[in-house]
Length: 115
Image 1: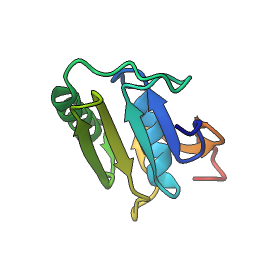
Image 2: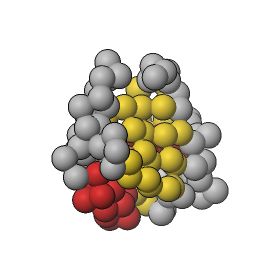
Image 3: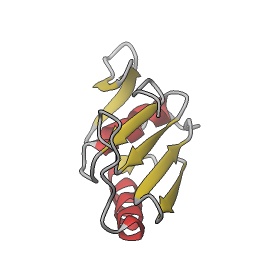
Image 4: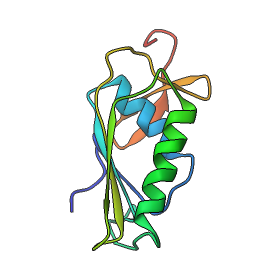
């Protein structure tokens, strides 16, 4: 498994922090988030990948403006969920009134010049 980069991120569980990464991926060239994997790339799995996939979908639909382009797939064998976010056609994409971009393996708030 590769390390976190500008276009891949690992999340041990589903928390709202992944939403700034969705914003950043949408504002740039896209990327993927794999849930059920630690930052050290250890598989810890999710207890219910299908339920987690629905939770992820609802959080994105309720929180990111405008609506980003994405695909979600649940892997019941490995207990992970992969979220593939496409580069968005209607930039900037906001989460919590802030727009984000990627800086190496981190999602950071855009400054006024980037907006």
